[in-house]
Length: 275
Image (spheres, rainbow, N blue to C red):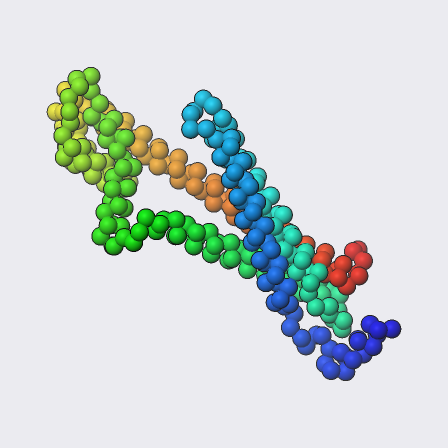
């Protein structure tokens, strides 16, 4: 009887079909819940991960096992946190009395999707802010210091391969300026699809002069080092690509979980039978 009177009153004043289809209070509340649960589960997963990872190669879980577990945990985080946030948004929204059932279903789905979107923005903002705070904890740096640190970091990437170039049975010290020059040549060579023959020839002569190798052996070493460095970069690229694809899949699962859970919460809120 009470619902009938409320329905008649709302129809007289224009009905719910003219009201906003987004319950922002419920959406924001559900988004904060989803973000909080995801951060808690992320901390839990990081704790377990650090517990099974060992700095020694022959102990602890393997890198592939840790990577697979991290992907599964990321998907679980998205499913649980987004489903919980979407369900709460569906249960806490305003009840629409004079709206068709199909429209209610669409609004619930949209509200759940908004929970996922707002929660994702909140989580990313928090993580970026925390990372920026930790990165700047050692004090303020000017632009020149940042550029110098970036240059040193880029040079350190190829340091191992430069050392490989100048390995020799004769324990002689290679001049740092020579290694720096070889590192610059190697870095430029890796950036080019077709390396400059002049650079490779000069690098081979440099290696032959500093290691005592014959020129053909030095050329073979340079070719092998360039190939190994390219393979290492390709492995990093492929690993990053796989990670991004799995993150995309996890986020899509989170969006679906939030949207579907919001419809369940909305139906329970409206006491509508699930067909």
